[in-house]
Amino acid sequence: MAENTRKEKRHQYYLDHKRYRPDYGFRYNVEISHGLPIEQYDQMIIDQQNKCAICKKSFTYEDRNHIPYIDHDHLTGKIRSLLCHGCNTILGFAEDKIEILNEAINYLRNHHG
Image 1 (cartoon, one colour):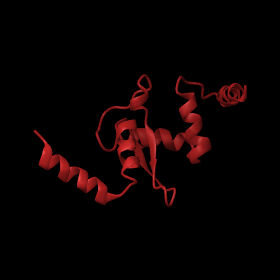
Image 2 (tube, rainbow, N blue to C red; image 1 turned 90 degrees about the vertical axis):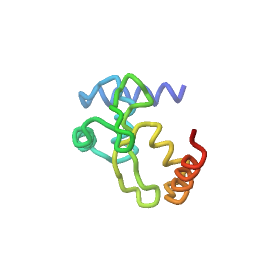
Image 3 (tube, helix red, strand yellow; image 1 turned 180 degrees about the vertical axis):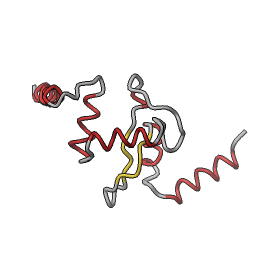
């Protein structure tokens, strides 16, 4: 029941702020969890030409894997850019450590095809 209450509050927030869109749950998270004003988030999408900063695939709200996720430094909280789910997950699993990502690249070079 608590989950319904939370969803209802989120839904009402977007109705009240006239920001109701199919992606309202994610946009709610942008403002509340990350402290990023919706207008700034929208500008980031424009600046990135509606594409992931890493793989360059276009963002879409129909496919949850291609919603723009906010990439941020977990130590400082600083927002870096917008990434698709896959690219954001890669950085998360690598714990933002360049050494791990370099080792993954070396692994692929040595074991590809």
